[in-house]
Image (cartoon, rainbow, N blue to C red; front, side):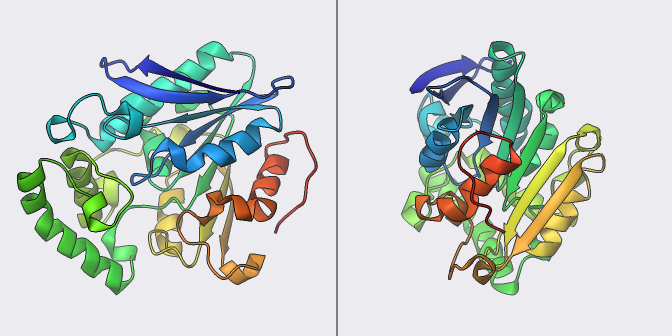
Amino acid sequence: MQHREKIIAKDGQQIAISIFRPSQVISKVLIIGADVMTSQKTYEKFARFIASRGCVVYTFDYRGVGRSLTNELKSFNASLNQWGFRDLDAVILHAKHHFPKHEIMFLAHGTSGQLLGLSPASQYLDNAIFINTSLTCWRFWPWHAQFRISFMKLIRPVLSKIFGYFPGERLGLKQNLPSGITLELYDWCSKPNGLFDFFPDSNFRKIQIPILVYSFTDDWFSPEQAVKSLLSHYTQASISWMHLKPEDVGLKKIGHSGFFLEKNKTIFWEFITEWLNLSGPIKKAV
């Protein structure tokens, strides 16, 4: 069963959430944090699958994205700091308030693995899963990715002036974004230590939970060194990391979001249910 509602972050911003409830007894709670270029729609089939195993699943849109866009995009102010410090924080606190006796777990796709360390409420999590999450920093990326980012940084001010926001859909990307999000993202890209040249990692170092990490060699957003660099700031976490080639699991391509494709559920999703100790038949993948 899927239920939609809007919750209020501490600064008054509305955050759109969807809650997938199992038909059987609730065992645990999983929150899914989206990547910067995706909305919660990307994770709906995965959420339904996990909910079928007895787990309440939250998906949500960060401010300025999907159903959390509350006014015209060109006049919408948002930052990655707000996404982590306010939006993700609000969702974790909502889950903790409504399910105080259940384990609270977090699945981060892409950028959400960085935003987790900005959320004070991360202290309430019991474990986490990172999918293609890495440090956003140009020096770790292949040359073609560095060229692409450099070009986008040059044209971003022009695009923002013309449209008042980042027109991702016009550029063949998945969605449009508030201008402030892309500005901050490019700032992170430009620094040798990414977001850690802007924010301390003290909260990252407080997170003392098991973290399962998947990254894939055919995703240029998550080269091995960039993943390793981010994980090095989660110093107190117990990390299990698999950096896989697609052929390692019998696939030709996985990329940045292939983990969440329903056709790959017997390879990845069922292994996740085992790691999370959820009920149901299990087929181990790797």
